[in-house]
Amino acid sequence: MNENNWVSFGKLGRAHGLHGALRFFAHHDESPLLTTGTSVQLHSTHHVKRRTETPQRIETKIKKVLGNGAILFEGILTRGDAEKYTHYEVFISRELFEETPDDEYYYADLIGLSVLTPEKKLLGVIQNIEIVGPQTMAVVQVDETFFAMPKGESALIPLVSSWIRELDIESKEIVLELPEGLLNAQGNEKRTRKSASQKQFHGKKHESH
Image 1 (spheres, helix red, strand yellow):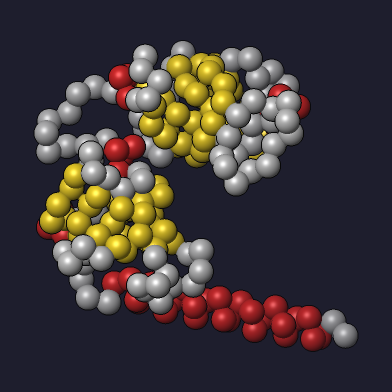
Image 2 (cartoon, helix red, strand yellow; image 1 turned 90 degrees about the vertical axis):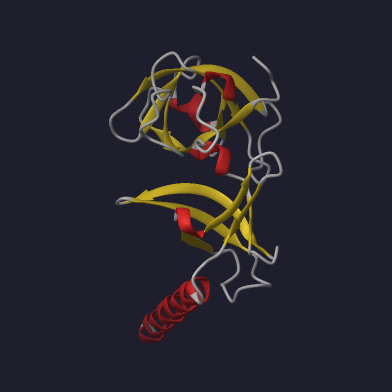
């Protein structure tokens, strides 16, 4: 397999149970590749500090997919083993994917794409894909200099075919023509919720004195 052809399959959470299982958040939890025997790589994410003896990358295979949002890998046998790989990212070889028609893409192909307006202004970068009811949604880390979103917040953008003007996987860009006010409305809602939660917190703190 080509080492340069691995794509993100999902992310690991905390250790689960005593026998090496980890919580797993797949980008596409109905993928036929999410099964026993699939070869994967586990990569350390750059923002997580590791002990020096913990490898930054390992190759393993899926041992078993548990029915409670957890997963077992070969060679990770105890809770202590699993705790070394919490928050690692799981990669899978693109060569395992079936070929698609020219106008169809895997969700994994969309993660990491820069989202642009028709005027080529950067809206943000796709961090994940979520399925909400019948709608495919892009989780976009929004450029806060362009939209009034709270720092570190993401926006949910429906991937409606009529909104997609260009999609270039090689250039890692997608051009979307969004309805006016879509992201600003989400930003206003997030700021309102944050403000309300802060007031509630301060009120409880005041009452404790």
